Length: 462
Image (cartoon, rainbow, N blue to C red; front, side, top):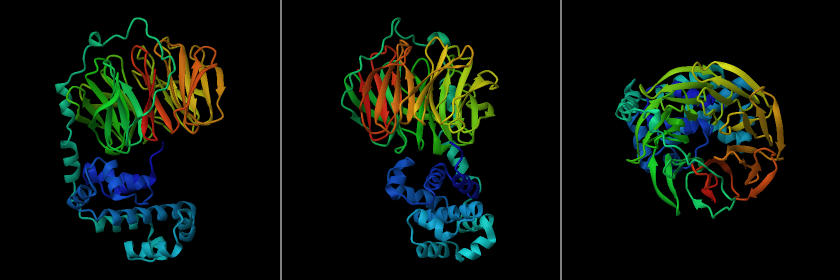
């Protein structure tokens, strides 16, 4: 997704605030200033209560949440008015707000009439917000970095490739029985199963990972993270996990044995997708500044990056570790990128809004789920599209089973998961979990599939 203009604007206006307050500003930017309940905002950014949130804003010299929200809404209106020429009356009506209320809100927040605010412009309005706050330059950013220093990575050096746990010699795939869903709060989005068979689910609205055992199927605790944890990957030994914490602008490092985030790696923008190189030494991450970054896990720093248009929350790496496949969402294109140099080697035009990509173990084909309602199969030897399977509804996540026999595709709007024969693309099963199924993972043996459902649960397939 592209960077949100209001989020960028608010961050530029208040560069010295702490990690928690930054996350609050990102939240207000994403809602265009429309204020969710304070308790909901606190949960989303990883705070215990609305009282802790209020203290954090006060310590950073910021106005109360309600006033910050009002400022965000006014700046959003001004940004839209300057970009489109729309009147305040029209902008207010878009959000079912009475025009008179909107005019009063502008006057109360800025001490100016709307016509006067339009005359001075957006830059001057941002200066007024900055003057309203009392942020001490540099203190917030320093506190943010010290909360989870990347230097802690040195205590957990990446294991040598020989330490990687091997999957069973003959993996399979689930028989296709859908069990009753396990409730998980916080809008589950991604799921990853570690080599020992414990699943971790990212809860984007709760700033935490839910830990789930597969046998028996139950919750076994949670891990606090930065705000809006989105994608999670494990190292080969299963000792560390890396989670993209969007609103913290960091990749969190999870010590699996201790069950906590022990470090954080700063990235430019909101980190979205992540995939780990086979040698566990490089983590590839996309961000909403439309960048693909290569992070050295030995130094805990971004060692290289390259621009990629319209990145989304997906990225895939072939088994050799040589080729990355990066969907470009609304551009309708998948980029093949050399992992060593981040050079774009070629691209595949599939149209629509490509979201999910997955490869079988032989690396010969690429499966791509498209929000415009289909699944593409691309032959990587020549880059040609071998097949397209239409669904008539938005396809989001896709995953090839460990034995390469079947392909799972989540149908977001229909609340279904379709299981396809990998070679013929014929439907061999259709699961009906309901809700909004997102990402999928299999355990190493292929006995289980786990599906994160944004409606508030995870589904286990046996």
